Length: 94
Image (cartoon, rainbow, N blue to C red):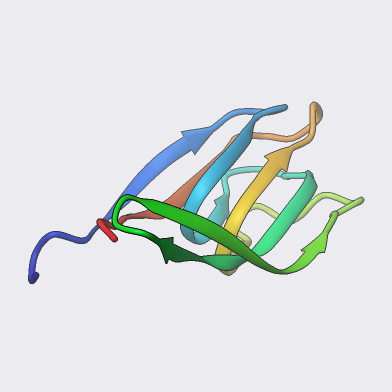
């Protein structure tokens, strides 16, 4: 269906986990991600979905302001010392 999928932007604070169909993460400051899982979601039945994780990593050091991390990303967690990030995610109806 055309027009049912929209990109949404969310602000994620320090020490917060975020799960979803994530296109990219944009740093508003020096961000530290304690975990980031790259992958995608597969449809399960008529109402569910399952995360397919293709790689997992952690970023020990901070990123520069304005850094973009491209997905597809399934979930991530910001460290306690991290600045907030902007998350571009899909509002997808499977």
